[in-house]
Length: 215
Length: 215
DNA sequence: GATTGTGAAAGCGTTCACAGCC
DNA sequence: GGCTGTGAACGCTTTCACAATC
Image (cartoon, rainbow over all chains, first blue to last red; front, side, top):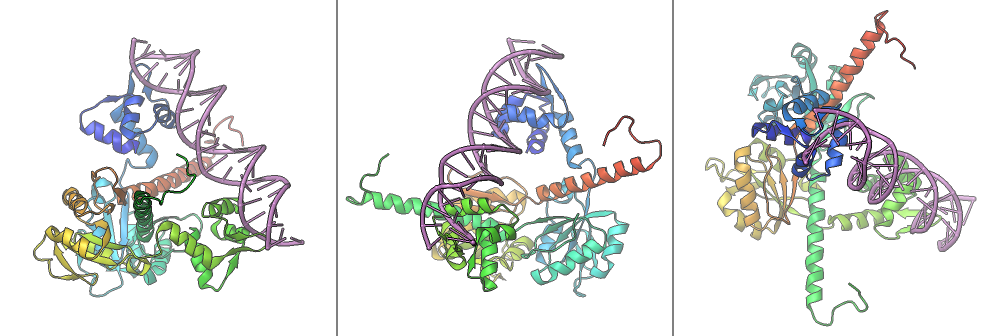
C-alpha cells in the first residue's frame, strides 16, 4: 500500500511527505505509518518528513522489486493468454519469459510476445531465461503435473490459478488465486444486504416489531 | 477454510468431528475452532463433537451459499473466456448468467455457455437473469465504464480483474484481484531466499565471518 | 515550530483452562 | 470420561504521547 501511494504521489510531483499526509492517503493512523516505515530504517527527517523517491526505492529494495523477475506461464489456454497479455505483468517488473503447454496445436504459436514451447522443455526455458516465478494457468487436472514440472525445473515461487490445491516440497512459496473464494466473500456481502432488507421489511409491517427489544 | 475442510470430510463419509480433529486438519488451535464455530451458534454436542453435515449447512447459510448467485462477466476477451469457462465458477454455486462486451465481432458468439450481448443491454441481462454479482474482465481503460454500467444496472457486488482501481458509490462491495500484488509477494519471498544464499556464501569464505558476532 | 522515532498504554485476536453438559 | 463453550490470561499489533531532532 505504501509503495502504491508513494509511487502515485511521486508521479504527481510530490517530493516530500509527512507521516500524517501519508496516513490520510492510506486511511490509517500516522503513528502506524511511522512505525511501519521505521522497520526499513530511519529514513525520515524530523520536522520535515520523508523523501518520497528515496522511500519508494527503499520499499522496492525490501520487496525485491529493484530488478525484474521473469515469469513462465504454464498453460496457453484462455487464462494463459489473458495472463501473458495482462497489462499489469510486464509493465510492473514481471516480464513473461516463457509460455509452455502440452497441446501440439498451441506449441509454436505466439502468446504474450513469446513462442509457446512444450512443457518438457520447461527446465531449458527456465534456465536460459533466468526465470524465477511460475504461473499455473492449466485446468485443474493438469495443475499438479505443472507444479511438479516447475519444481523440477528449479522454480521456488508459484502462483496457482487452477481451481485445485497443489502439493509442493517444503521451501516452495505458493500463492493461490481462488476465484470461488473471492465470489464467496461477495456472496456473503450480498447475503447480509438481503438480511438487512428482510429486517427492514419486517419492521415496516405494523405489529411485527420484536417485543421488549431495546435500542 | 472450515467449509472446505468440513465438506471434504463429509465427502469421505465422516459424519461427526471434534474441534481437536478439525484443528488438526486446519493447522490451527482447537480452542480457536470452538470459539470460531460458537459465533454460528451452539451447534456442538459436549462429549461428542460436531455434526459435519449440519455444520456445513450452517456455514453455507452464514456465507449465503445455500442458493446460487448468478454472475455477469463484462469483457469477452481471453480473461472473460477463461473466467466464464473456469471450473470453479458454475460448479461452486456461481453460474454465469451473462457475458457482455462492446466489440461487435464478439457479440453473438457463445462464451461459457451463454451468448455474448452488448454492454448497453447489461441492465436487461441483469434483471431477466436475476444476476447479483458482476465480474470485470476488461482492459484497464474500460474498467471504470464497466463498473459504472454494473452499478447503473443495480449490481452491488463487483469482482475486478482489471489492473486499475475502480470508483464506486458507497454501499457497493468491490474485490480486486491484483496479479501484480500477488507477484510482488512472491518476489519478496524470492528476494529473501536470495539474501539467505548471499549470507551463506559470505559465511563460507574463510576470514569473512563477522567479528564479535554471537550465535 | 514541525515532524520523526519509539517507549508505554491500549486494544484485540488467540490460547489456556476449566465449568458445564452429554 | 470426553468434549464443548467461554471467562480469563496472554501476546501481538496498534495507538498514544513525548523526547529527540531538524
